[in-house]
Length: 52
Image (cartoon, rainbow, N blue to C red; front, side, top):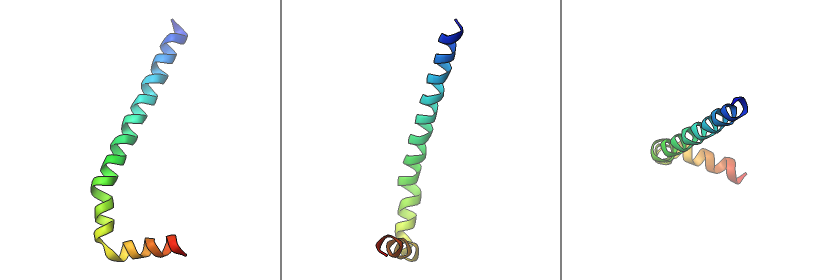
């Protein structure tokens, strides 16, 4: 029963981390990214960093 229980907890941990990362990605796309794009100074700064 030991290894099976360990595998279950590892699977639950990975699924939990997966959902957390999806949630963070969702928040990043919906809140932070439009805010950065609206802020033209930050956007031009990132554009210069990417181009040069």
